[in-house]
Amino acid sequence: MKMLLVRKFRVLILMVFLVACTMHIMIDLLPRLERRGPEGRPGCSCPPPAAAAPPRAAPRWPSKHTLRILQDFSAEPASNLSSQSREAAAERAAGGGGAGGGAGAAAAAAAGRTRRLIGPGAPRPPPPAAAAAAAPLAALFEHPLYRAALPPLADGDLLFNVNSDIRFNPRAAEQPEWQNEDHHEEFLPTGETSIDSYPNWLKFHIGINRYELYSRHNPAIEALLQDLVSQKITSVAMKSGGTQLKLIMTFQNYGQALFKPMKQTREQETPPDFFYFSDYERHNAEIAAFHLDRILDFRRVPPVAGRLVNMTREIRDVTRDKKLWRTFFISPANNICFYGECSYYCSTEHALCGKPDQIEGSLAAFLPDLSLAKRKTWRNPWRRSYHKRKKAEWEVDPDYCEEVKQTPPYDSGTRILDIMDMTVFDFLMGNMDRHHYETFEKFGNETFIIHLDNGRGFGKYSHDELSILVPLNQCCRIRKSTYLRLQLLAKEEYKLSLLMKESLLKDKIAPILYQPHLEAMDRRLRIVLKAVSDCIEKDGYDNVVENDFNTDVNTVTTER
Image (cartoon, rainbow, N blue to C red):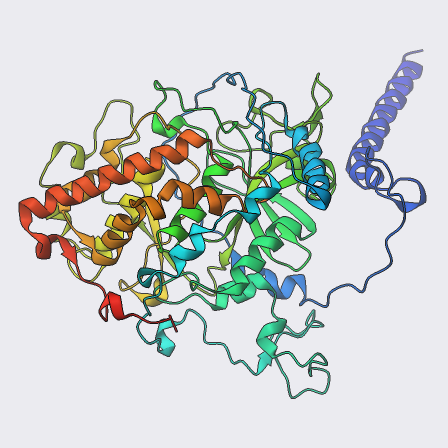
């Protein structure tokens, strides 16, 4: 009898083990099974297409493994961020635009139906008539201040020295080296030059030089912005590091971008009792920062565009990241949600939910991979304490700038002027979270600062954080080109808020900023000009304004 019980117990243990193994295998196979519906179609809840599209030849891009090494996004330095939960503020209905006629009205109606998936509080798309309105932005870019030529570029001033006679081999899966056009299969039947065959993200990379991330009239930038919102997403993975969830998205042309999902509506402000380090990162702030940077003629923010993403087809069904896939769930309101893994704000209480499975987000183009173009991370001299009670040294020492100016790399070159540019940029956005910055190592200290990670800008439109301007007030230094452009943007015909509004309307998820944020920029611009004016009155124009023009700005011709 005892032996019989022992045998039964062993059989029971064996059966439990087999059931556990079977369940484990099914869980691993579930994502693949869900992707296949009847007749091999993806198994999603969306209706099938009315008619099959005619087959198109797949683009002959370089191997994924060949090009993946060319891209990366800056690793964000860890900061002492603390977690604070907040309840979502009640969404207010946003005002709508006017109706258009003909095909424009039909397109606006279709866009309106798509945007309504975001929720009742989401802003509506701009009216079709906006495209026909006057374009002060074009007039701004024709102004002599926006046509000043760069110094002549030597080989050492280019991030990559590219031979224009060399092109990427679309069949380079097993040949990672660059292919020469002398090979009989490498001639282009279309007559285009080799560089024209590069994907737009690669054109962006090879256009980077000592003075700018991209040139003023580089057509590849507009094309890259279009790619960010139209290219098919082939894979998704979570980005490691940071306090909030960010996704790395890879496209069909092997380009990659950093996706920051929507967490707040346009109208929500950061509560006054919140510390700067516990605020959410806003996707629309990343988009607006790119446009503001371009209007200021800095061109130091990588291209960013807004996109409406299907969480089922474009994230869950294409990710190979099991940790990400397992966080998907259906909410009580029947919406698709996920939360991923990160230091803070990654839980069911902070889940990202679609309506029902559509979610907005910003997509920032990757910079070249660190193995090809190393970047150096610098601690911002005016970094905040990231503490609830402690203050940083610059907050208690009015002569702090004198100490900074005696410390490399701020004791020579243009780095201190770059810090002043970044200060103005951050103050206009209300961004208090600038703890580090990066430069390309190849160019040494004589190069620009890359303006990365701007998600905590545009949090408050009713408050101007004057402490952001402390570097300018303490150092009393500014570039002449920056000062003249700020004066220009304060004029009625080149009003900063109107230029930003026009520029942001080009984005696919426009409007990007709530109107009070646009008005706040005009107000903050006047504060910046008053601060510079006070410095000039105290120290004299020549001691404050650094002339960085190679020629008389009034005689400048078209940029090279």
